[in-house]
Each structure stands twice: as structure tokens, then as C-alpha cells.
Length: 254
Image (tube, rainbow, N blue to C red; front, side, top):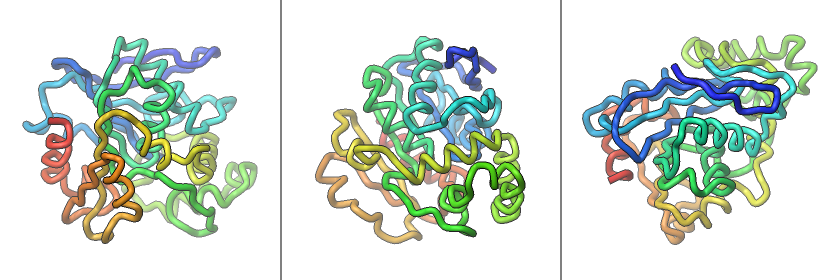
């Protein structure tokens, strides 16, 4: 386990690191998750092993610190991640990022282009969403006010999340979980999708084939983004079908 201070108050991001060659590969989890759990199995897959790999936990999540004074905007997450990567002496990394982590990775590549050489987005958030009470995921969390969420709304989210997601969501600071969800559904200006269209690096977007055609795929492909359906999986592609995920990711990074 490695760590780096990423705020002026000294709050630390932590990551598990696998040794290997450069360029480094950086794995970034989604909302209420942790990269060592979500990516360890595929990071050591024969198709992906051998590269220096950082399985990094965003601030507020997993093994990283959970400051209550941090705003947890997508830009804040991206800047904190950038500080951790610079401390780790990482440049021109191959970034593999899931869900909210994909949104953070897009912002990272736009704000800190020297840190990112390739992007593999795994069913990432690209568009603003509408909060909805009772919905699963970020839309449901963002439907609460922060005081309401901290006072007990989080228990309703826990009960909807299910055992598997709660296993890692429980490691997330409550302020971090709520604020990250609020800013994720709010998105960025320009949107994450618009930022992705303009990035100059090789980009691949993986999505679950059972969900049907990915909205806006034609525009993404016209801008040079490879849009790849992955069979026999849901949103957590790397956990649901690790073999297909490893193949698709290795092809994207070849």
C-alpha cells in the first residue's frame, strides 16, 4: 500500500501497486467502490499483467482518507488524483476507469493532459442525470439533501444497494458518498461527453452488450472513440465477465 498527501490539509490518497514496466497503468473505481477489490483480479490477468499498475482509491473512498471539508466535485477528485499520480512519479499513464471513476478520468485527462496517454472507460458516466428518490446509485443518493442523508437517509441507500455494493460503499465517508453523487449527476461544463469527444488521446468505451446500443455511440466513434460492447455482463463488467473485460481492455491498450 502506497499513499500521497493530496490536499493542503494533508489528506492522503492510497493505492495498491503491482510492479512492472512503464507506462504505468492506473485503475480507478466508481462511486462507493474501491479499486483493489474491483480491479485486482483483472489487473493480474495474463493479458494485462506485467505493467506497473496503481489500483487507486479516490479521496473519501476505500483505503483513502475521508475529509469532511473536501467538496468532492469531479474536478476536485481529478485534481487530487493528479496530485497522487505526480507523487508516484507517474506520467502518460494508461487509465482504466469504471463508472464515476470514468467521469473523473475524463476530467483528469482534460485538466492534466500530461498524466494520461490512453483512456479505457468502463460504462462510465458521460451525461448529467436527474436525481430520483428511490433510484439505485448516484441518482438516488443525490435526491437527498446532505443533512437528511447524514441523519439516516444513508440507511435507505444501504438497503437498496445490496450486500455486494454495500461491502465497499460502507468504507466510503458519508459526506464523500453524498457529495460525489451530487456532483456526478450534476456533471461538468462542458459535459463529460463533450470533454471526451475533444480529448486527443486514444479512447475506448466499454459497455454491457445486454443494455443494448450505447446512446450517442455514433458521435463518439466519429470523434475517434472506440465503443465496444462486452457480452454477458452488467454495469460491473470487470467483475461480471473478467475474461471478456481483460480481452477488451488489452485490445484497447495494444
